[in-house]
Structures are given as C-alpha cells and as structure tokens.
Amino acid sequence: MKFRNLKTVAALAALLFGAVSGSAFAQQIELKVGDWQSLQHIQSTAGTQWFMKEVEKRTNGKVKFVHFPAEQAAKARGLLDAAASGVVDIALTGSLYSPDRLPLNSVIGLPGLGNSAVAATKPLNDMVRNGLLRDEFISAGVVPLYAYALTPYQILLREKAVANVSDWDGLKIRTGGSTQALTARSMGATGISLPGPEVYTAVERGTVDGVLFPIPSVAPYNLQEVVKFISTNGSFGNFGCNLVINQATFDALPADVKEVMLEVGTEAALNVAKAQDDLSAGLLKEWAAQGITLIEFTPEQLKAYEDTLAPVSDEWVERIGKNNPNAKAVYEAFLKGVAAQ
Image: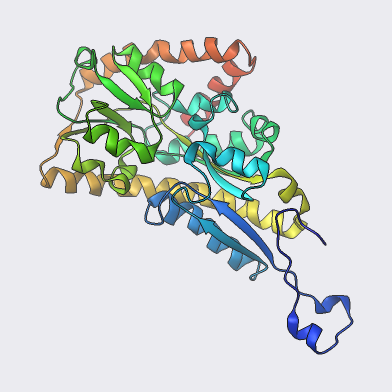
C-alpha cells in the first residue's frame, strides 16, 4: 500500500529468508510533524510530544513520528500551509495565525470565553473536530486531530502597570491576531500582531509596551526577564492551537490508525489544557518572589473591563459575519459550551 508522504519499511528479515507470504511484510508508517514550540514548552511536553508517544504506543510501533520543533519545518504562521501542501504530514497550527483561512476559528480570541484552559478547550475541541469550526480546516486541505485553548490571556507590561481601563490608553500591545486586536483597541491601546517567537525582542526593544499572553507560555519565551508587571485574573482573550494532518495523508491511513489518532487526540486536548492550568499558579508565585509585580484586578475593575469589552464580540460577529453567515451561531455555540462546564 502506498501512502502519500509516508515511508513504508519492509521487514528485511523476511526478505532475506525468502518469505513469500504477504504477511511477511511489516509496514511502518512514518509521519513528519512540524511544530513551532520548543521541546521544553508545556504545550509540547503535555501536548504534541504526549500525542506522538501515545499513538506510537497504542499502534504497537506501527506509527513513528519525526518531530521538527521550534519552527524547524516552517515558521509558526506557515505551518498550516506546510501541512496542507505536504511539506510535513502533521502540524501544530494557531487559529489566530491564519485569519484569512480560519476566520470563524478566530472566535477563540474573544475576551471572556472561560476562566481556564480546560473550560475553553472542551467546547473548542468539540467544535473543531465535529462542529461548526471543522469545515474551515477541511477547506484548507487538512483534517483536525485535536484542538485546545490556552489559559485566559493576561497583560504583561514592560514599564507601566495598568489597573483601570483608562490606563491602557496609548499603549502598544502585542496581540495574537485580529480578534485580540479588537480587545486592545476597545481599551484605547494599539494592537500589534506578533507570533510568540518574536515577542521577547519586541518587548526588550520597546517596540511594544505590553503583551497579551497566557501565563504558561511566558517562561518558555523568557518574557519574565523583560516585563515588570503581570496580571493574574484578567480574561483578555485566548488562543486556539490545532494539531492537523494533511487530508490525503489521513485518507490513506489504515482505519485502525485513524481511530487511534482521533482517540488519542481527544485525550491530548484535555491533557495539555489541564497541564497549563496546573502550571499557572506556581509560576505566578515564583515570579512574585523574583520581584515582578502581580496585578490582581478588583471586582469593580473586572466589571468595568467586562462592560468595556462587551462590544468586541458584537463587532467580531458583524465583521466575520459579512462573509461567514455562521459567525453568530459559532459565537453562541462557544458561549453555550463554556457555560456547560
């Protein structure tokens, strides 16, 4: 059997001893995986690497992965195209990195969608795998294996702390895409879209004043070295990550391998989400001991943020809905999924 982008390895021992039976050939499926995270990142250890190890184990070694972390195969923004074109078989992609290809999936960037990674991951994975968000991936030439959300984004600041909404006025804030840019703009700041690997230099040089970032992703990029203030209880949007596989490659896989991949995918989504939630509290305590000032918004301040950010979702529905009639249904389905947790 031939696989597109797969390597079939014959059992050499059987060949050497002249075995003629068809069962004498053991096929091993090798899949190339492109990733933008480092091997030490929690999303890699508890997500991509965990997925690969479990699939290899549950297929008894029938499937083997060749992993290209830290943008070795393609830049973060190019990994969706890399998987779709067959440069790699599987890729970790970011929904907000492809707003033109995945406009409905940018819903995850809206503020207020869950107070933990697990709370947002459950509805996100359901909608990407089998719901209203799946078709965009299929149209892009890939099949989603699983999706997960990060912890709610907090604000990290280089020099100036924020407390009230008015404190954001005039700040240049790194955002993960156009949806988060709406959040920054609604508070008087300017959103500057940058992928994770470029953020450290931008903060260090003062290109941006602050960063919207999830707590578990701060240390892998060493951002705690270049910021002085970090909020602890805001909800300034989120980010969706998706492990996707080339459509033709997936179609060529044996049925039992497909089943294992999808089964492990569901588990991997929740595994990496829970790992992020568990990590956050310890990191904040550690950084406070190192001299970083933690910003905990009061109930009154949180209410003011909620009121200020309310129009962001309406604007997203209107903007995305111009070309995607399912925008409102997607947003409402996500809210319902979060509320059900």
